Image 1 (cartoon, helix red, strand yellow):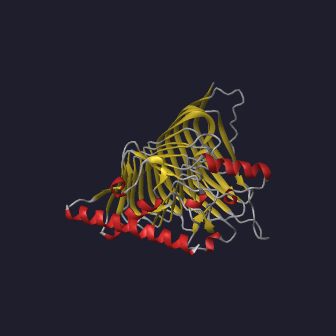
Image 2 (cartoon, helix red, strand yellow):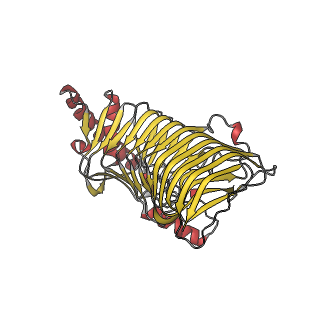
Image 3 (cartoon, helix red, strand yellow):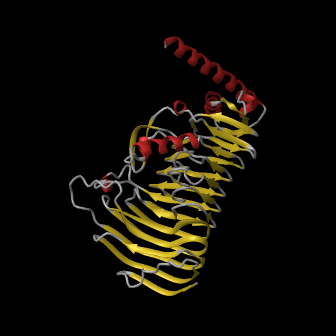
Length: 422
């Protein structure tokens, strides 16, 4: 084992020295970009490039920053960690392809599903505490998808109680404690788990992303916003086999006491996005404490799957406040519901204490047109205070003979100018 260790270390040092020499030459020539192929990366979809790419990132960082360029080609890699001052641009027809080998994602302690999970899988691309990060281009971040999906389904067939974290699966992209970031133009494909997870980030623009996983790809949420503030999501196309955009936070009976890890998710702005496959176009929960000041406008729903425009998960073992959620100017064209507000108790654990209280207030959905499968439901747990839910100017058509409309007359709900035709 010692011989193997020293061989690996020697290889890593040699790669780092080579990359550093290239960076020095580029700096001398006044260049601010480093193309990974110039450092020895091979875009043949087979050669594992983790060490070369990580050494390139580290060397750019040591040289004061610059842009790492992924050119045309399919570059196989394990987990990568970005550094301050190092941006990434993936060119059109360039692919960062995630390895399907779990050993290429060494375990770390990390935030996932509303808590810090020890020794869990990192993402394919990871960024911690970086300011002014730019992750752009017309290329693709492609996870190892099918291998991880099959592993999950196989285990669940053997044990129906299998949970997400029982199977080691990497996300495509994870940002923690990042500020003033831009993620733009990229395609996200075949993520083993959630596609794009942001935790405790602030002032991040996410624009023109194309995020897709096929039906049957478990828990492949599009964008998960977890304890973040001032997040701008615009012009994205999302089609995944779970929630398209999920607003999250902490979980558990004492979640509000942990103010270090469970920050409010607030000031979230979503516009000009298109949603296809998914459970909810925008979902509040399931892990969440405080979500407020959310605006969604000028979005389209299209596709044959049953998706809900706004899904509100009232988690019965977690104190929750959902407040000031506004959704306007939506066009539906498929098998969709407008609202789903109900209890969520799949993994309920109150530690023997009474169920906590929940507050859902100031939710507005207005100016909705197009075709929908049904209106949805408002059926929260008994200890949920509902107030000022306004549904107005909704003129929709349904092709479903089993269309449901049972939200009128609910306590705290106002329905104005709702027209449903067949």
